Image 1 (spheres, rainbow, N blue to C red):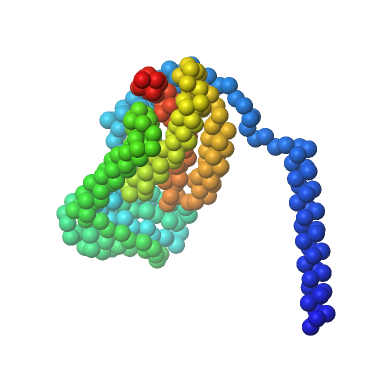
Image 2 (image 1 turned 30 degrees about the vertical axis):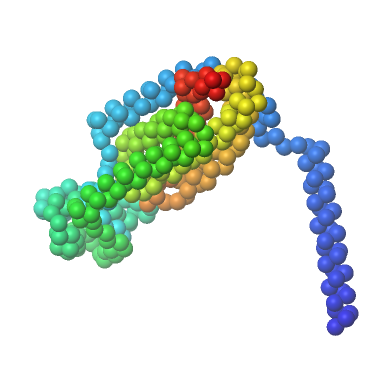
Length: 333
């Protein structure tokens, strides 16, 4: 037993020594060949080009409003009420034949689409009256049985009533507005009221952009879309708070520095952190969008778009608006 213990101690010491040697070698390599993904010091004139950023924001906001006014949102079953059926056929599905079997049979608005495999079909049917979901599902199964050869495997059937969908829509609006107000209050208590206004401008900007993205791409706007909007709002607020914290620190350190120069310096000092954080988060969201499947495609691509927009708004919306809120004059008073 003693011999086994001594041999184990020797092996552990040898492994520890080898691990320490590897660690020292890695540290030496990092010192000799430093890896700088982003330059340590940058001098971008963000404030000088703020009107260019404002112009881009105004242009995309107008496009979002135009698409919303002309096409509207592709409301999901969560907000409209109806039946969602996911099925698989034995052979590749003929959507045209299935659509002919369902249209004109009193089902109302019917939407069919493939997702993933050519045999997988998603059917969305809007229900006008409460309590018709069960009868409608049986009618759909009967019609498809006569039109589609072979066995049909119904993998998922969801139904939402009109009353529940109305409640979900109001809950989604309340959640979005309540989150924005809570974030505004948090920034107000942590910084000054000017910072909270800059934050809310950025959050409104991001929300308009993401909703316009859903209207333009025709992705289904349901509860997952609300979750995407709230996620992007939180991400954008996190970036803005980091920049605001450096701005407040520099305001105490450089009391005579021109405010526009102070803002530029603060944003350049946090730019490396902003870019690296956004890049890693963007890679994760992009992997989810490319390999996550069709079911979460709208959610994933909206996250990719929202991360880019949130990073942009924290630099060109939330920080430059402080110039017009005269925070430096109040500090000097």
